[in-house]
Image (cartoon, rainbow, N blue to C red; front, top):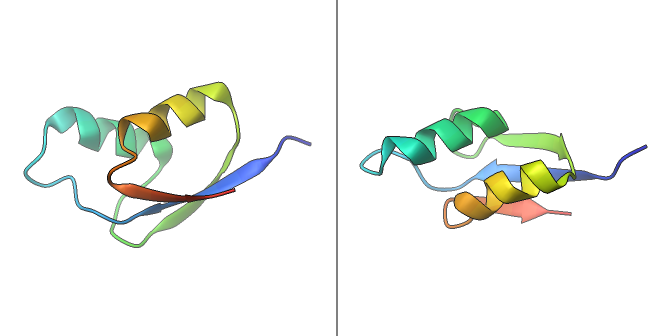
Length: 59
């Protein structure tokens, strides 16, 4: 079974480029303080890296 990580949205994408909102939507994050559990893959890590200033990650 693959490792999982928890990602929590800490800052709103409002007022930022639409690109960040699309990345957050791809991660499954819709509202502030929402936490999702995702598989730890290189693709997910790359998406998190793009919005690391807006999310908190727990391994």
